[in-house]
Length: 117
Length: 517
Image (cartoon, rainbow over all chains, first blue to last red; front, side):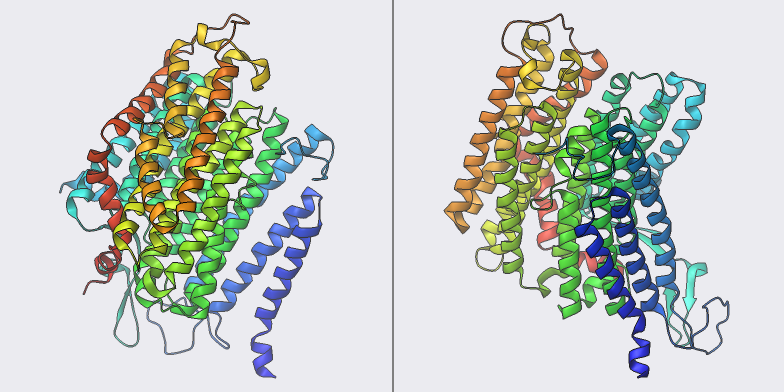
């Protein structure tokens, strides 16, 4: 049972990936596509944080570290960077969606297809 | 070995980055001041890249640049071991070769942009993004760390999409911007997931360290699959190419040339990961055939789609996609025969890698001429153009050089590298060589069509030759194309062969440069 609980974050990652893939494959609305991309990013970020987590560990912020269990600092640094990058890409995607709506009057990817073939 | 050479790797990233953020500030003092700053930055960067490349080719081993890592930056572990906290750039002959390509294309494109960007506003931010994209590409090519590779990949993605959608008043560019950003983000996520898997498996992010630990376990294989998919997507290999024609076609003309350099940097990442990170721990034969499958699809689909285009920019975009296939074919054949016929493998690798340089020069030239053609004729539709050759003699000449080189007509540079690829892939299977040659002939047909439609015929309207500021960068690339074509042996011996052997047999050197021993 504890085994299952310890692995719960990985199941959450799998669930998020599944939701994101479902959205990306079935949805045609550009805003929903952005949501799918963001959920996929969140899944990867959760995966990274979980990689570095040690049950009962403390935050690794010491000059002279005591001999206690600590979570890994590197994945947290990676996740932080990845969140910042994700923010930039999401902002750019949404602003493109705004401009697409202004030009085409719709957000339906099925109707926006001047660039085909 | 002086201070400049020692610090060249970090300066190559820092200079354009600094220039990118300074450009909008200096732009407040007027267009001239901003152009002077951007020109200074890009000239210094190109000179540094050349200088560093000459140094690395002479060195014979990777140049390592360490940020941090000294006594003050070490974490003592309870076991007494010191873990250095540092950021590494590792430049071997292959990285140096790639920085040369990027420097050439970025120099020509930036120079061209000074005359190309005539809109009253936006020029500051446009040049800012162009420099940011250049900095990101340099970073991808030199970093010695998987996570930094991901960060630089995202820097190029964001800067590239900013440029693709820069002209917000054009509806197609917004559609292209959204599509490209979504797919670039997706490829970035795949790479990040793979980096996470590798970290979880081996507890490190340094490429040399990971390379020394990777043993081909299931997790390693999954990570390799994710990396190959993500980077093939970012490089625009069919069937993951949906973004590429939109990106190259809708971006401002000089940007398209830099976008091709960006795709090549992703290809570089792919090759670095396959050869240096994984080396012989995975079944290279199967991996080689996967690359060959990607390559054939890319060549065939790229050329056939180019054949049916009426939009000149989109037509060149599809031929740019097809050229990515030739690079993949060269390296894929090299991988597939690495165990059975290593001598042909090396030739194939040299062909594929040489083609990167050749493609950057001639596709870059074609994109630059397309900008001049579109400006002069006021349309992108080939059916509505005509007679440009009467007034635009120089542009016509440059277009011919670029088109013939791309189609692999001797004695231009495309022929030199494609010949190596034909020769080596024939050894593996004649079918590969036949497909590659047929595609080149079709490409020639495509460009004959463009030449006839855009340049020949009666002069329909008064057009003027492109401005000198646009002609000079085109001339630089055209001269490069001709020189590379006339003296291929010289360049293969001096820069291509060392780059190929850095991938082919330089894995131990690459690891030893960081880990010692």
